[in-house]
Image (cartoon, rainbow, N blue to C red; front, side, top):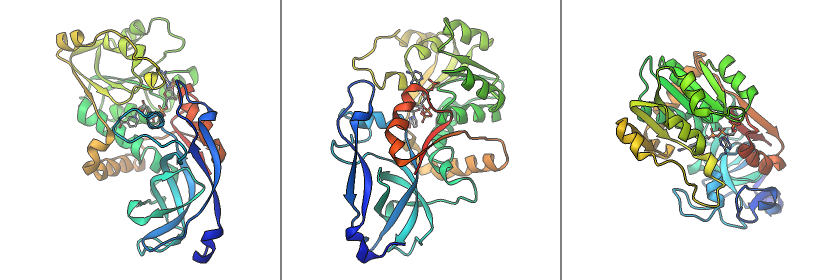
Length: 341
Ligand SMILES: NC(=O)c1ccc[n+]([C@@H]2O[C@H](COP(=O)([O-])OP(=O)(O)OC[C@H]3O[C@@H](n4cnc5c(N)ncnc54)[C@H](OP(=O)(O)O)[C@@H]3O)[C@@H](O)[C@H]2O)c1
């Protein structure tokens, strides 16, 4: 444990945004720096990062375009989901050794306001799960699928980005609801995992399938009732060509477009939505903040009853954060991409 008097001399490694990417992000957009750890004041705690989340939405924050979260500032640390351990506390709600989760800077050690921290219970599930199935991605899967998709027993649900943090949970919840589930992902290994470990009824490797529209039609003999869209682009064009009357399309992510330098042109979706009386709705998980405890409790219950499994790709070393993040855009993760300090 560190003592308060020593804080002024303690240093930590941090990762800052060195420059804004043009197109695909690269390592040169990040820079490692050493910085001073400030004194721990009343209502604050000193933390040591254990697990760091890298998420596709962070690409948006690296640009300076206006969005639902403000952009990262050049020269300042990147911020993301972190599970950390309390090393010193000056707040009665936290004691040394507690594990917490919060949006925190990419620093090995940091001082944080206690008000911003959420204590986690690693007896329910491993601590890293609070960045995945029991955290933001799990809640995204839960609310997007159930609230917007409203999947009914016997319907067909298609999910793109199926082998990732959100997609693996979407597919399993759809199975719990009694649906036929078809996933789309980028490698044979992922396709095998979706079918054998996560119970998907069929899965399509978009990198090796020439005619995705036809492959979806074959995998979905009764058409597509719910499409959970994590990727956008040509994959989604192919799914939309197979949607049913009164289908629901959940726009969760558009990772295929996050590095685009020009607005891409695709088929116009309005005619198919019109003629199929279909619903297409975008959402941000933060729309459901006041229902997070409902979602987290249900996900924890499904994990404890073995109805939900979770996959993680854990990369060792704080210094690997930039490449783990970049790896998301090259499909290097199965399930949730996490960096372990
Ligand atoms: N709306 C919200 O509040 C919210 C919250 C969380 C996440 N999201 C979005 O949901 C999506 C999934 O997030 P996640 O955390 O679960 O990420 P993830 O799926 O764990 O990781 C990203 C995956 O996307 C796939 N991918 C990368 N580039 C692609 C491309 N050009 N075309 C098709 N697939 C590509 C890769 O898998 P393959 O090998 O299969 O290509 C990669 O493994 C993202 O778009 C994210 O931004 C939205």
